[in-house]
Image 1 (cartoon, helix red, strand yellow):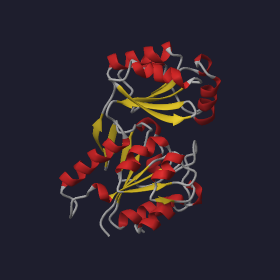
Image 2 (tube, helix red, strand yellow):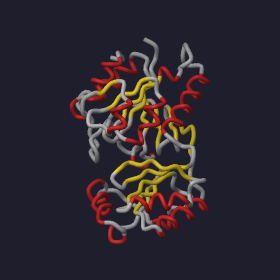
Image 3 (cartoon, rainbow, N blue to C red):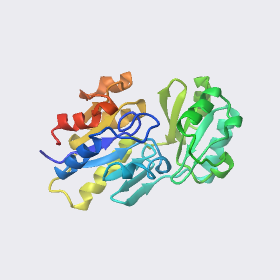
Image 4 (cartoon, rainbow, N blue to C red):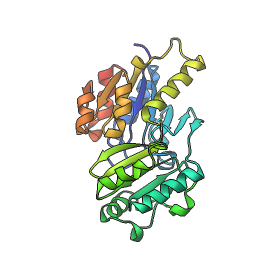
Length: 271
């Protein structure tokens, strides 16, 4: 079969939320797919700070599209990086504080948030304590010029929509449901990252035929995966994905720890 360009989400797709652990046959499946000529690439909402210190040790991915299309690595090289400027960042931080929105400001090397005692909501305090208790954070005042996107929460989602009214020319909003949102620079998405990498690979001259959108496969589970699932020639949903993801899927695989990735790649014929 022709080479496939396969994009993998992380949370809820490669790993269960908050655990740095692959299912038993996931790394094997990725290696076998690569041996058969397919390109395996991470496509995540996480920025490099929450990926590059652990995931490369678990499986041999060819590249990493990080931060919903704000940074692209392939074969050890950084191909593109969009960081919010100091002025843009200050405007964003002022807006978050004015609307009492809790957030993680996410950068290549460091993430930024308030300490637990200064967060606005008990829900976000628990979210940070449950998932990221071992992480080092820096305060908001150190963030301008050093973050690419952010993840946020508000008890009243309307406050996030009100915040976006003043940011519409700068930012795009992804509703992760239940009061959680992912917010990225205007025009950045998992789909734009896919196109950037596709163009890079075709210009490299390393492939016997042009890779097209039809050759792209996306595997995901949540609403921030919708752009890549819609853009790929083949869309695969994990079991227990969001309703919108399941509606898009050409195939629904098993859960993460029930060899969901192995079964997906087997169904594709990549193994």
